[in-house]
Amino acid sequence: MNSNKKVACPMDCYDACQAEVIDGNIKGSKEVGITNGKLCVNFAQLLKKENHKSPKFGNENISLEESLEILTNKLQDTKAENTLFYTGSGNLGVIQNASKNFFTQYGSTLTKGSLCDGGGGVGIEQGRGSVVNPPIENLINSDIIIVWGRNFSVTSSHIYNLVKDKTFVTIDPIKTDIAKKSEIHMQINPKTDYELALLLSRFAHMQDMEDEEFLEEYSEGSDWFFDITRNRPVVSYESATGVSLSLINDFFELIENKKISIVVGLGVQKYLEGAQIMRCIDSFAAYLGIHKKESGGVWYLSDSSYGYENQFKIKGKNKKVPIPEVDFGSYDLVFIQGGNPVVSAPNTKAVIEGLKNTFVVCFTTTYNDTCEYADLIIPSSSFLSKADVRLSYGHEYKAISQVVEEPKENTISEYKLATYLIEKFGFEALKSEEEIIEYYTNAKVENEVFETFEFIEEVEIEHLYKNKTSSNFYLITGKSKNSLNSQFTIDNNVYLNSLSGFKNDDIVKISSPFGEANFVVKLNDDVKNECAFFYTGNKKTNYLTPNKADEESFSAMFQEVLIEIELSNTL
Image (cartoon, rainbow, N blue to C red; front, top):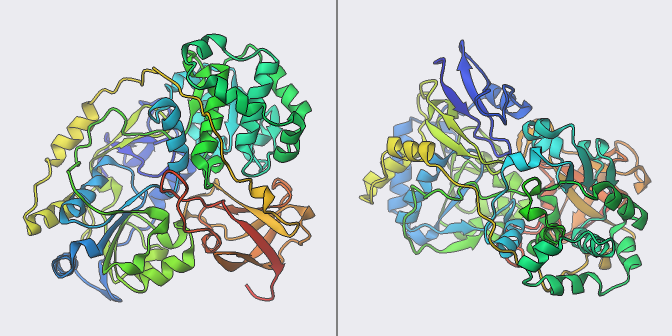
């Protein structure tokens, strides 16, 4: 391994670690203050991960040249519109987009929307115009950090270390690690985040804590927004959200005259009306005026490519389908890059049935659950053998990757695969890899200039609790400190409160309108009663979730479901 070279973590998390090779070992870089010389648990686990080494066709190992020939012949013999290009977040380096360029030119069907952040992103965009986080210095300079639906100390361990001495308030149905470190924990009922945002805005007005200067400058819709907050009795918010009015009073005493930041997670918007929910939270922040302060602001999963020109963009008239609604079996060929939809996509049963009825190509660094249904597997080269740039959605810094080891035999990079296919089909060539890397490395992007804010003026959200019976549970998912989505140490249990009526290690059948699966119960009173908590990456959770898109962003709404739990005899 070549020393004195940079390595960017390719994984799907907020921190985007920057590392360097020192004496043959990969260590956290001090050059980027976010990483601050330390590697997180997930990056350390990635470095130990065994990569897939040999292409496979059926159950037979073949050479890389044979696998590329099979792929080329299959594409030549298939109508382009009957193929699907499906990409996950296995590697977030910018060069990974090279493959999409080929499939766009070829004419494949593409996906739109997100399995992750789409609804919340649209909500923010509707209010502010773009999905861009404030400079990380604003977070560091704040006094109070409100953690809303995000296990901040686990999902953003590097960023958390920069602000761990701040005062925290957590809003979450789960008593997360960060909730246990917080001055106040509002253990909210699921899908009532928008109601809490409206209640907080109403209290801000009652206690004269709204930012009148901000509201005067950005008056568009603020009166309408306030009217929404007072169209029902205050006490009704208390019963709906599960948050007491006395705790709300404590909250306002704590934040008065303080510099405030809000870090919002994905949990708040995993619903049909995720965009509206996120927009209510962002409107509450605007009502306090924290968007225009030199310290504080609202952080979400930002658009990491904001301000950059897409170096692979090419015009195409490709059909696009919402990613949660993909019917894999309706295509003659499905090309899956860096994704594991058998675990990560909603309605696992439908995903598996679809994959069984098409020709599946998996282009991946590791052998995952989806590979079990692949006809052709092409191993992608390790991130250690590819030059790349990682743009972060958690902060404004970028991480650089240089080649630190030779690619393994029978593996190929995304750029080289795209180049090979483009040449075979005679399509427009890509820019050189060196030119693309140089652009992203040297491009300077200015922080977004906040010019306007439009408050949400109408809220139409179906209360999940209105359809809930005494036997129903809310489905909640969240990140584990020992895994990253479907990678590393996977926990396939269901976590229930001790008041649930079940015992530790009970085997239960959990069902929803979309499917069923059996789980082992683990009792944990950090989970709010009437909630069933599953760690992201649990291989059975998505047997229960709806493969339908939300109302505005074509994105998944994993938690828009009520489930039934009963004892079972078999796992």
